[in-house]
Length: 117
Image 1 (cartoon, one colour):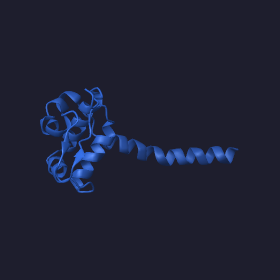
Image 2 (spheres, one colour; image 1 turned 90 degrees about the vertical axis):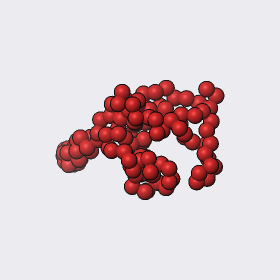
Image 3 (cartoon, rainbow, N blue to C red; image 1 turned 90 degrees about the horizontal axis):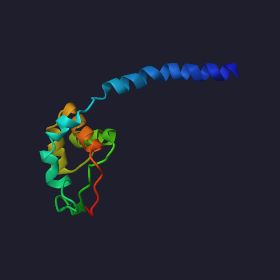
Image 4 (spheres, rainbow, N blue to C red; image 1 turned 120 degrees about the vertical axis):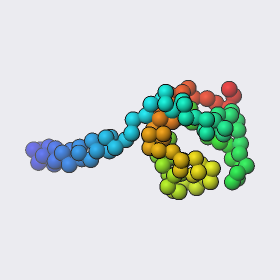
């Protein structure tokens, strides 16, 4: 039993600095600043039931109520090219990490909308 406790303690001691570094690396977002940056998003993501035809026909996902970590990760993937959508890649390419965090904070705190609204 003591060996198990020691192994768990050792594993936690090894993991905690990495977890702390990951949290410190995350840029905190400001929803008020994010509200001032949404113009480029609203043209597609702000229209209920919107479908786009470029580069193919699909429903544009809603951003309201999304998890901020997910939104930041998605924007970073568009910026790096890991996600391939030409318009989103161009938009994300112009964003700083702070811009992404601010936009994510704004959308995370806005009420979830549905196609019926």
